[in-house]
Length: 191
Ligand SMILES: [Zn+2]
Image 1 (tube, rainbow, N blue to C red):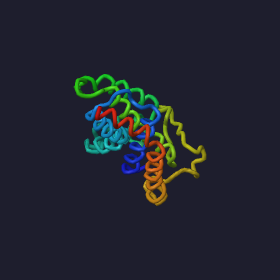
Image 2 (image 1 turned 60 degrees about the horizontal axis):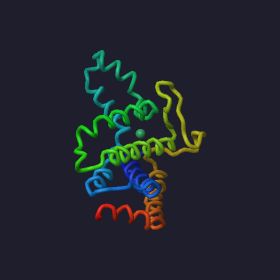
Image 3 (image 1 turned 180 degrees about the vertical axis):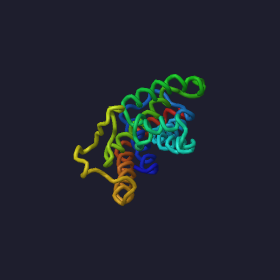
Image 4 (image 1 turned 90 degrees about the vertical axis):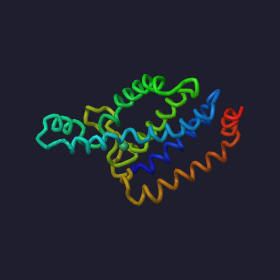
């Protein structure tokens, strides 16, 4: 999936999750940081691709580069696995309270939002041909549906002209259907 699709899917996932599991309290800072957080979370898993570019910049004979390239070169490795999800959760759980001022915002809600974005990324990727290496370092890929040929090709017309618009149509439909509970969440902010 492209970054654009991941953005939209993360936002739709956040709104959906919030409607079903509304927070008990919410201030404006937490709301804004959470919306951005879901987006950041959705882009995190593909940092391994950015990582690939970093390894490429090392001189080709560089041993470290060679080792890391062998482990991480394939797109979708550690960051798209269960170990990766657990590691990023533990890391953020530790780091967020240190970098964000809990007097101004609720770091638990921000953490949950980032993880919703992250998981939405993995869910979206599982619909693509490549599938997900959930059990990395084991080389087994999982996908929905299990038959590879029935899945989506990343960045092709089906993603751009069907999947992407469908996410927005879903979002509008969902917001319309859940206006009352979503409005209640926004009321928490002005309270
Ligand atoms: Zn990905």
